[in-house]
Image 1 (spheres, rainbow, N blue to C red):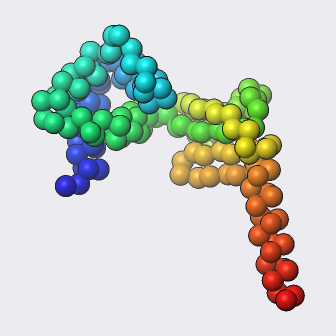
Image 2: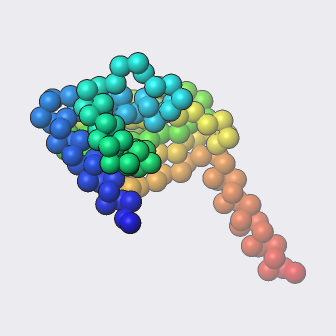
Length: 158
């Protein structure tokens, strides 16, 4: 069975429901919080999410919930003309987040949502992902490139 097809159909149905109710942004925000911390489920879910979960229980499809959430988020952002960018930095950097948001908005006529994450393992620099593009300007990546070049040069000598 094609799990991608199942997930996208339920996500599309949820998108249509939220467009009718006008609560797409709230549902998308709650889905984002649920996906960040799946251990902490709020007491009160959005009514549209409650309907979805009831339907999934009825059809024995609760296993697809995470995939449906991913599909719905992508569909909602596309329908609302929102570009989502993911920024990973070694330390919190609101200035960099703002600069990247301004830079992307110069080339796009849509709303930009920058999701940030701090990962000290990248040592320094940043990793930016948006529109299926990846810009890895991290120190960790630069060290990996140097290591690879060093190994290649030294294996030729032997």
